[in-house]
Length: 211
Picture 1 (tube, rainbow, N blue to C red):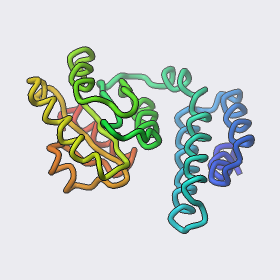
Picture 2 (picture 1 turned 180 degrees about the vertical axis):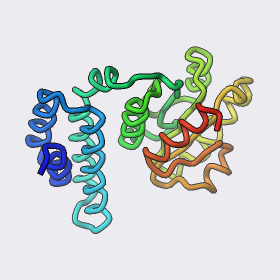
Picture 3 (picture 1 turned 135 degrees about the horizontal axis):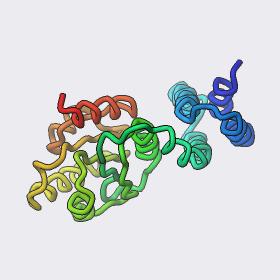
């Protein structure tokens, strides 16, 4: 079994010490950081399946997310070096009245590893903050994340604020999160619904390349 497949299983088993050690070892061995990120994603898929099967519960899911974030922390600089080109920029944030960052952080990491500059505004982001970031960073894309059905109106209001500011035609709006689907994207006025991080990358590349 390779280091990275062992890494995926360690994360799936919530073995924090093993994940930390394996990431450090992989980096020391000059392993491709993109491969390490992929294995961490595979580990989170294991966690997700256990959650769906009622083997894990919310506390385990939160713990896994924290391990994932800590494991990714030392990969930042290596990922930047591994990326050969910058395709464009996305402003990313969890919308107002939602403080969940797990899904957003995964998407941001995967987008970064695919050559897309991520301006992460964090969580509970005010509508005006998205507008200000568009004006400052001149992104081609804006990404909204949420985990609560109660913030669909906030997501819709954020799109409306971008439109009212006269910058809606400058960006494509992508949304994602556990309770989100295409009907929500249509309701809030987004350009695309992204089921997961990989779909987000594919969608972002399509827009950035004008396909």
